[in-house]
Image (tube, rainbow, N blue to C red; front, side, top):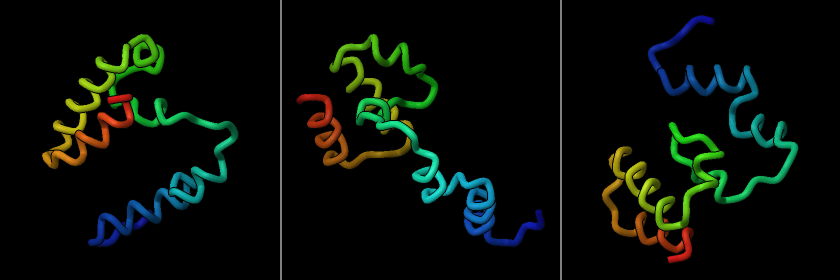
Length: 85
C-alpha cells in the first residue's frame, strides 16, 4: 500500500482497511466487556490482572498513566474513583 507524508492519515486508512478502526471494532464486538477489562495496562495478562486487589490495580494503572506522560491530577482522581477510592 503506498504511503503519504501524513503518517496519521496513512494509519487511519490502514486500520480502516483491516476494520481495526473504531467502527470496525464495534462491529466485531460480540460480547460485553467490563471497565475492569478495559483498564488492563499493556504487558499484564488478564489472568494476572484479575488476581490483583483494587489497590494493586490502582497502583499499576497509575504507573501506566505516568509512563504515558500523564501528569494531570484529575486523571489520577478519576482513576481512583474507578477503583473504588
